Length: 70
Length: 428
Image 1 (tube, rainbow over the protein chains, first blue to last red):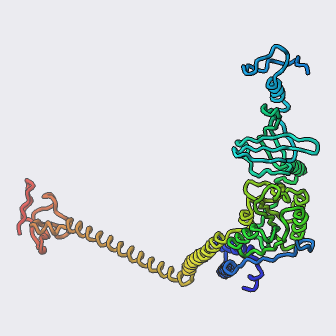
Image 2 (cartoon, rainbow over the protein chains, first blue to last red):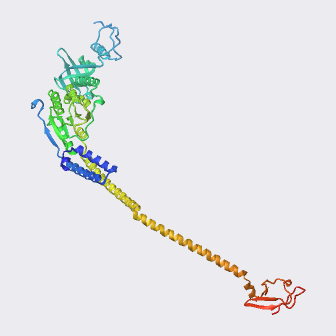
Image 3 (tube, each protein chain N blue to C red):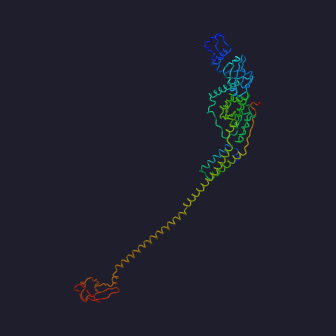
């Protein structure tokens, strides 16, 4: 479950988290479905939190346009 | 020179220069006359003059004196302190300028001069004109149309930045990104941001970034500067490169008050580089709040769901109990009990009724029984032979055998005599 989380962008993760919450709140679920949604949501929330906590701004500098070092 | 000039008037009421009768001018008269000619001329009352400054001096009084010249001529200029104080730049010898003022004549020296009230470096006015011209042209082409503006992604993953790597603007942008949304990956496409080389480099940097698929949006930023320093952002090829980008471009050039062509073309114009960075990424604190809220709603949703399921379960169990065959047997058993109870009740009731009926009849029988009367001393008299009840004197004759019944038994009697008067005397 955590493997596929790592392939999610933050946007996807928080988006899926919020839709998961809505489905869980929507009701009309079997217990098994509800538990699965709950666990998925908790993992997503944890994943997002970890991502925010761990994030460090990464900067890559491209070479000067046209290769000219001005 | 003839002085019968058609519009000539007396050179004023000034008594210092009385009109001579001779037709010969005094120097002052003529000078004053010429002064009037110059100063009353509508054309010379508002002059825009281009030239190069020479002989620049700033008097102790604060007034500026200089000459404007071109290859063929020179004009003296003065700028009074009140106007000179508003200058936001330093005029100096050799600078080409655009001056605005009126022509006047300084009588003590017979010197006409331009009294300057506005002075700006030449080219600035030109830049303004070019700026407005380009802006109007691109606007007419539709490059600034609101429909062209693309929406920014809520969560950019990769942000391209076009600016000078040494600039404070870049540090500001990176600081904001680091604080607000360090998840973002920054691709910096370095470029000069002022000077002749800046526009082609900016264009190349924009194209370089836009060609990369991972880029979500592009920031084009530069710190504050003079109009000339920001000029690269009023360049047509830069404007067209921005318009041609597949990704949204956010401009943050100069200060709040600076507007460049790049700002007009960009999908979003930020007042400063820092503001541009703030506009393109979400805020970490907001996100953490959102996450916390989501987590809370997950827990509450699950709790509510479980409570609901428990409640449903209880109801189902009740239904099952209600529908089980055991329950039906119990019901039947109870029905039987009920019927039995009702039957025995009915029976008891009926017995009671009979019982009370009997008692009533007994009472009535008792009331009707002659025995009770006999007890009070009455007797029943019958013909002994026939058993006929004797109710009247006419029924007996002397010698008739009678049976007399009293309370405790019967005895026989004989009638002695019939009674004429109807009274019968019975003897034992």
